[in-house]
Each structure stands twice: as structure tokens, then as C-alpha cells.
Image (cartoon, rainbow, N blue to C red):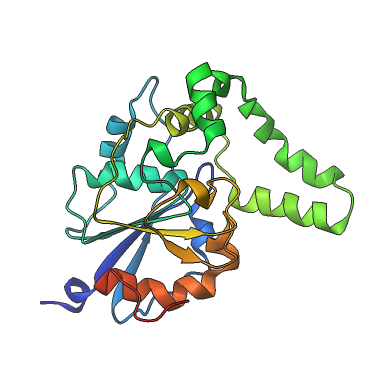
Length: 229
């Protein structure tokens, strides 16, 4: 067996509209793991989530790989795993089934209100940075431009629709779910069976990366954490 074959291959899927640079601070020991970063592809017209996941699977080049998905990317890797045989399935700041979606998203799904979200406004992120006033606002605008780079309107409309209308009534039992107790997008009061990151927000993959660098290797290898955070 070659050194490359001995490594555990870990594929990372970013959140909605985000690119793989959200994982820039994540470091796994190179003698044990090989990190691969997936990027969003533009969905075909009226493409189902299942069909999209099958297309994404073409970018997973190794058998028995680990799939890691953040937010909507967590939903994507769950769909991908249905036709793959992953060594481990890990979701971060995400949900495992429809019942974990917050009430506002379920309401938007039942009423069709999600269709009214002006996704074209993301095109103005670059302009917003130029006119932003104050250091905090300028910093936030710069972060949006750096990490939320997927602004294709077909993709955004498709992603929002498939987020709120996700057809999943029962969670897989083999999912490792990592969630912050301060997540405002997917509040923990709707989440069950998860590993808690204290004071973790929806963007903790960026600002709590030290936690992930410490515990992800354990979770990938054994499926559990040896010591509590």
C-alpha cells in the first residue's frame, strides 16, 4: 500500500453561496489525512437535489472517503452519501432532517414565501464594500465578498428552494453533527443528537477553527471525542 493510499481522504463542502476558503484555517495532520475541497457547481434548470448530489459525487475520487459539510453543504453531503459509502459523514452548523429546520423556514416552505427572497441583491456585495461606513461594517462587507463568492442567481434560487423544501423526514443514524449553541440560523432548540461547541455561532468554522483542528481528527478516526470541550 502506498503512502497516498494509507491516508484518510476528507472532502469538505462549504455552506450556501460560500467557497472553499471558509476552510482555510482548518488543518489536519498531513501524515494521516488528505484534505480535498469541493466547490459549488451551477445547477441545471429544474435540477433535483438528488441529481445535483450525483453530479457532485463525480468530484469524490476516493472510496471510503470522509464527507464534511457546513450548513446547506451539510444537506448536500447527506444527499451525496446516499449513493456513496463514506467512512464518516460529518455535518457542521446544519440540520439532519426537516424537523430540525427553524419554524420560519418551515413557514416559508409551506407558504412559498422563500420565492420572494431577492437573491439578486448579492450582486451588490462589491458595491456595498466601497460605500460602507465604519470599520465594523467595512470588515463585514469584506468577509462577505471573500467567502460568499457564488452569486449566480439560478444557483441561489435553487439553493434556497432546496434548503427549505428538503425532503428528509428521518435522520441517518451514522451522522456526526457538530453544532454551536449560539447558532442563529439553525437554533439548537430544534436540534437533537449533536456535539455542542460552546459559544459557537453559524460561522464557527471560521472563528472557532482551533476547536475543529483539535477534535476533527478524533471524530474522523473514532467517531467520538475523547475529552469534552
